[in-house]
Length: 83
View 1: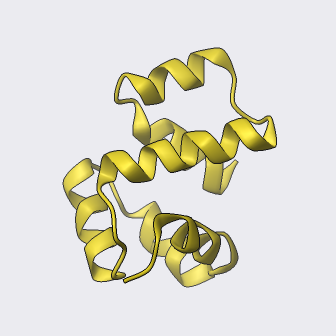
View 2 (view 1 turned 90 degrees about the vertical axis):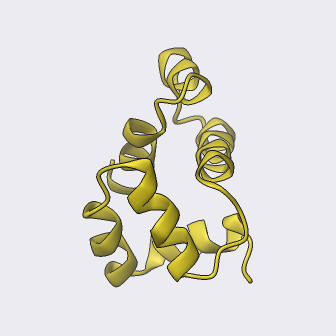
């Protein structure tokens, strides 16, 4: 199994993974995507990792941070990978 951090890096450089990610519309589809790609972690873990990366890169604002903490994972996921 790969870590979430490793998988996030893979997504950033893979056009194929980005295209698959674009098709995800809900948490269940994201969970399936993570499992299919042998990622060790939950949807919530994935959201937290995206939030941490955005904070480290200085690309997340307070409203976005609040959304992730409150379960608004999808908009942050989309923003992180697709701008």
